Length: 304
Image (tube, rainbow, N blue to C red; front, side, top):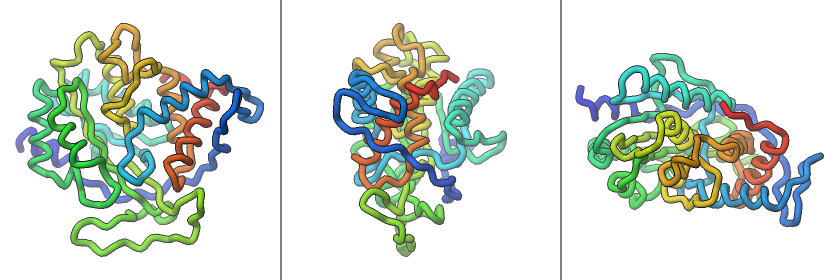
């Protein structure tokens, strides 16, 4: 088995998973000089930072909301020796556990595939051309655009990534979109409302490619935090993050970006705590902003 075919085998689509228990999100943040979160009063500056995070760093497929892993992650690393590979696996898995997910045991079916290489564009293009349906399965709302996939293949970046998510019936846990050659699935619509949908978005797999010749002054620990961030959430590869306290600035400001920031962790905490089936991007953004502020003010955010 060749290197690329081995990676492609790890990228075969996993089946739908049983939905986790429903969670209730707090009220959406409103405009004003301060926001009351129970006993907590949040300054306008903190609210502005949270809003900028939510507005800038996420990248959901068209007409869908930001997805998250529904239950568990299984991390695989290719092209690294045993010690650094295990370090990456442990870092991503530990963050996943801190967010309430299960980390896969050895031998699990990988849904987070991390590849190290000295020629990321060639590896990315080879993977896509050998199995295009692994990257764009054909179901509505499962991936970003063809143009985004082209950038994944051609951009000169230290780290590149590609997410596949699945619109999922929030009651049954079954896929809610039709794939080519299939009949349209039946979706329960009895619970839909103006604020909530019957469909949530579940991450299904992510491939992360590290170009080892481009990581510059970043340490391996910093790199592992960066990879963990993009593995846990649909991060916009072209996000404008200047001035935001985030690990996403690592390759522009390695000396002042030690790793995952408290704001990064607050964002991820909010994403995994928010109600998963908001009907609009605006509603989800409001939930995330409120929950980010709540996580920071209550001390819920802790560095792993």
